[in-house]
Image (tube, rainbow, N blue to C red; front, side, top):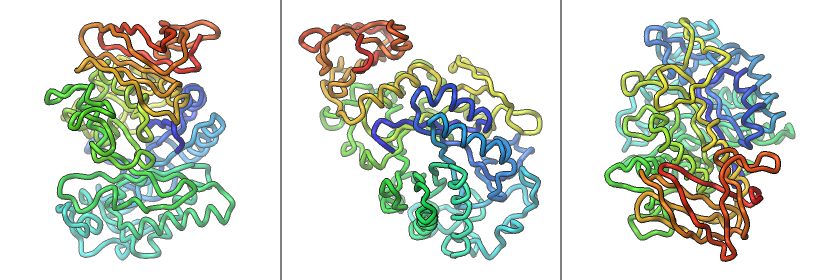
Length: 483
């Protein structure tokens, strides 16, 4: 990834709808890529209401039919998104297969049972003796046992590594530009590196671009494995693979006010204990981190910021996209009740197939269950994608806050953003680095032709602004929005 890039996870979206979204929304807005749900044949679990976890339980690596569509639709999506300037990243589930129902039939009609997947794997391809991941302080237990009872592939076997690599190579040859490696922490580092090295060497031999990789590696107190154990994985054109930075989600607690926290604590040069920085938070280096406020797993966690928080959620996304740390991912998902419906799959028909074409419910906080929400289309998010590109390469400076929940900062001489999370309006004189002039606020719509679709912000001859922000609002301007 390059500084200024943003990608979106269109969770459980159908392939035809993603293709149209690339052409109509994502390409014009400047999104770098789309992370799509796992495209392989997966389990079908009607007695659990066709849960979202079906997609993370592979049956075969064929693209014949998943809940998002068939192979022809997948190829068409990749090609149309590429033409629109948007890369496709695939969520690659390569640590395990499915275990339920067993025996069962996959989404494309393939029969299987736990440890036997005809034409792909048999019982000798899995870790034995059978065991369950129960002790995260034990690396062997984490990497060689079954996660949630899912049969754990023995990736120390060359044949297994070759089979997995062949799947990734097939996708790369179809034009897939990158991969999220699901459950990477549950795969031994040497084995994972060998798999990705096979892919990269094949792409190099064929004269094709090397894929972008990012690894799902969470961390927790007392755990034997964490992101730093995977820093050397998958050397490709951009260096080693990026890694999911789960600690970044603590930003949401600042916006929610959890435990008395507030957003002025996000000052990257603030006092110890009230500062957002890699060192203060124990974050990995910015150029390795994939950051997000929530993803398809963590959106189910009670107490975490989400679309249900409405305007607070919008403002949190403004901050994530306006500050310079990491490679941001926007989750665009669907509505459900938590914790009661945490396993609920996407809006679908009575047979578990996703309804297409999708429709978006933009009411968010008041949206009923079972609606796609299209968070990425919201102007607080979509228009900040452009801002991040324009200010790329600059640092965060000229910080201002009211000591609690109103903040402002510049991005060098290229941009300025202010966020008011307070319940009342704020007014302040704030210094910037922007050249004097009038600027069009990007959030309501930015510049339309030669006119401003929203409010204007005036930078005076001293490079200061007279900031006036209504409650729960934000303003963002960049050098290209100067009128």
